[in-house]
Image (cartoon, rainbow, N blue to C red; front, side, top):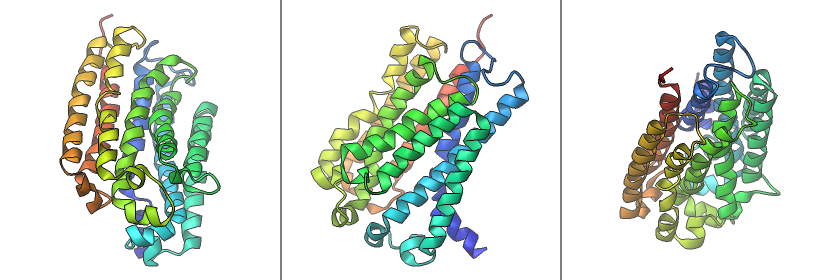
Length: 307
């Protein structure tokens, strides 16, 4: 039982819900998009449900593996920043960490393959970018903006499209337009997790934005990414590029920037607060905002429409 608890902690369960929700929301959005209640991959509703469920499990497994990969290559940094984590504390052996990481990533790819080939390609692309972020020789975590980019693409852009691919083909403009604001949001939001890691990142040669420019300047730079990206959904809806009711997209484009502005207020009021722990309130609010964004899209696209 203790071993299971250590593996559970190593997977960082706090981070697993959002990608699973994103996959489910992407599937619901595709099911509600024109042509409504039609699947490219299967005509049976039970088959659609199975695809979406497999996709959600895939996203959670891949994220657990991504977290494991990051902790393995950040071991020396975590000895400084997060010594209580399973690896630096010695509660989990490095070989066991590799076994868990390999197993969860393999499971994620297998689940993606069971969904369809597009989901598999998107999952593999996300894995490649995740590996580039954490592992040498690329290890983009060392390079500021490039680090943010290799986090934002798999966690923001590709996640929604992968969810869509569980129901309809991703070779359409609509899922990519829906995913673009999420990618921009994560491009800025990904820096908040670096605020509490400055001592170890600096010692480990990782020039994240807070290391390069300081906490206050970084907070100012990333602030717009919590507000303006979601306005694009309203723009796309007004332009007729989305098959969802325009009014619903306007509502999301109004509410989410307000929530983002509140997060900005929390961060800018005292940026140094984010250095107090890896699950600071502002970081939790960012995850909550992402879940609300995904859930909001699912509600808007599934809302009954006049015949």
